[in-house]
Image 1 (spheres, rainbow, N blue to C red):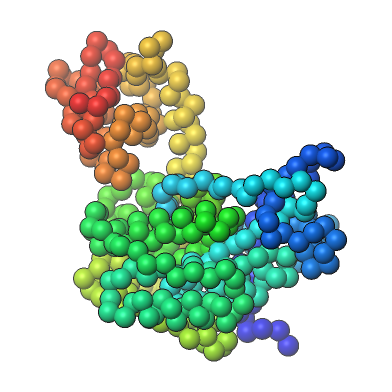
Image 2: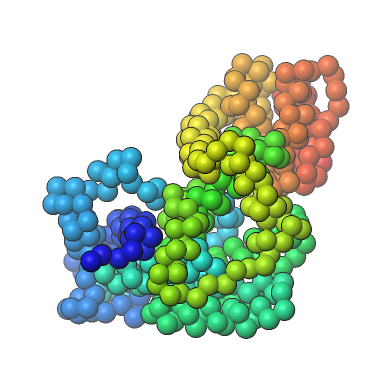
Length: 407
């Protein structure tokens, strides 16, 4: 008799992401020519160790067992689960190169708060990783925002170790105030996870965001009047070098909770998740239930599908803007207003946003209204003055050119 359907679902989602990680790791760890050195880890087992299968053989074995001898990751089709954007602050730093040793198996960390979503993710990682020759560890972040948060973080770390994860680390952070409490906590958390990934040499960090979280993110972007990029929600792969992976974006929150229950995994329900002082909490407790009552079941699934469609469109428009940018600059690198005017608004505004960020405007503080004002220098030119942007950046029209620079 197989595992409970909820447990099977979370394990399958994690298995597919781990397979992607193995495939990517094998590409970056191909054995060099004889006599040359290669990146490896001091703790990597020797080539003769029976307990350390190569990444390539593990990937091949997984593909054969899970998908059949003639299948591959490309054959998932629409049934495949896809492989919140954190700042890309820390690149992967490979360990020092040592010659004549096997490339190490990749280390995958799980970010775990102790809630049902992340505990389900941690349990699935602990179950699946050893079968594929992947090292698995865990990180829990203590935001220090509630009494006893340090003790809870220690409890979560203990649970992760009991699952067999290693290394496991509890990290205390200081949450600032920039952008509001939710954004500040998120920034502090991702900074800690980035630093931990670099410190441990992790290839990837798994996050427990579910389809419900994705639906909430789409609605929050819609309420802010944001563009299509915001409506695309959280990416399945994001961060520096694709560090962050979200296996559960196609799994609902109840499935993750059920998986914890049938495995007798203790979970902690953060009171902030039901505190009406937080926008996302109000949306979760009141907004989405009201939408489902008015529109019927399936709202969450529809919003998650909207996120994926929006992401595909946004990616295509971003690529178009990158290609078009060179053609709208003169020999001195200045943007030519006449050529910008000829572009579709969605492409033009992306070019303007990129130019503002390159001039020093913080991306997080650069809103649609800022770009719309700069766009009017091109589409509604009446001799108006310079536009002040965040980061002390100024945009102004001079002699048919758009100049965006530090003021």
